[in-house]
Image (cartoon, rainbow, N blue to C red; front, side, top):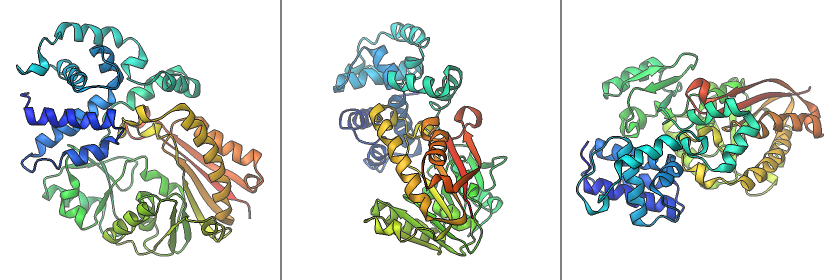
Length: 405
């Protein structure tokens, strides 16, 4: 591979925004890729994948390069040098790469790879937390799986098409996909590509949604004609799936504390042809109180640490802090107790997170059922824990609870 100056410099600029200005990687990459209209798909892929790689392996590369944060421009080039050397990419004769100690880089990589916190490039506290919650053996496999690049998974929008028809339409646009056994509406792309430019996307034939995430709406056991409340709807990936499962019949009330996310949901719903969604911003406590005891089904896709989705959000490793998780666990307990009141007697609720930590998952459900007045009105029907190391998809948890009649 030959390195091009404009692409390398764009990569360095993006890393500076992420590491030194605390910006989100996905937003920085999106902005960076708009810089030069002449860049083709290979150029764009190089920038996006290189940035994500260096973000993912920041701790390991910084240790090898002997640099510490905040990274100045010279330090960022040293991180890039480590990335290129470990991939066997010949470095051009630029001043930024003068005197690269190639052998020393490989030697340090070999010795640091024997220590998990460097090998998997994670903060000490995260490594300790993972071992404490999952045990040495499971955590070892899980964090390794979460450091792999996430596959691109689509969910066929059954309001407009079928999985087989979508596959055929995409093939016509030179995008090859495969069905995934055990996932009803999912297609996995053979190669990464910008699917948002396809006519199939513009026509609302699919959403990009990880395979594990696609199991959540199905877990809720919705039926056409029901009244469903999606309490932490966000931009609505699971809301849209619920609408498809309900065949546009009945009502889905989609609530969130962020009104701008619900605007995005409205836009997506229009494209998907989902007409039974009623977005409501939670601007006062009255919004939720009015819904108490009214819903056949309630989805609580709870805010969480996101430790199950590190493969697609590697910068979360550096943004998360242990005290944030401690506070989050308290918030989750409040959310499940408050939003469970929306379920009517005989109705059902799913509590879900994209985390692999028991403290955010089964222990939250156990605490709700045993230690709260509201929880004593419920019983657990089943739960499911999805580990990335077992499926190759995101880490997730979901529990189906029923309110006693």
